[in-house]
Image (cartoon, rainbow, N blue to C red; front, side, top):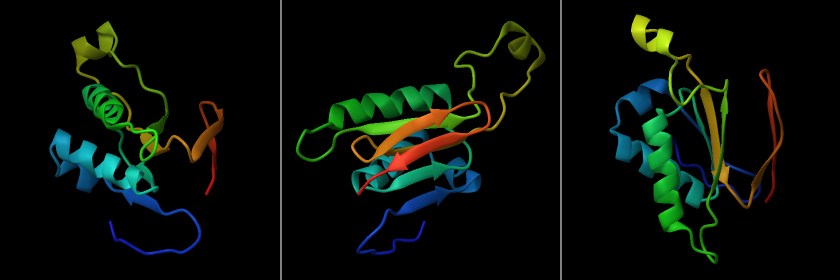
Length: 124
């Protein structure tokens, strides 16, 4: 990710699958939280595992401060079961890759979400 200073607008960090695979779980979580704390929208080419998403939410909750950090908004596409079904586990099918969008809770609002589209409003 390159850091670009902008006076107006919203910075969007697009993080590749390869970059995320090279990081350990806590490094991924820090990368995301640090980006969102800076007011950026972070888009992951490949989403987090269910355990990593849980840890991200846990760490975020511990860092919320009304004056500095209001938390995150997270949406994934396509939706993925948090627990794979019996047949998936038995036959070793991997769940589908998912795109994940994460942003500051006070700047991103999900307007619409279905199996084909995530529509969000990002404010200054």
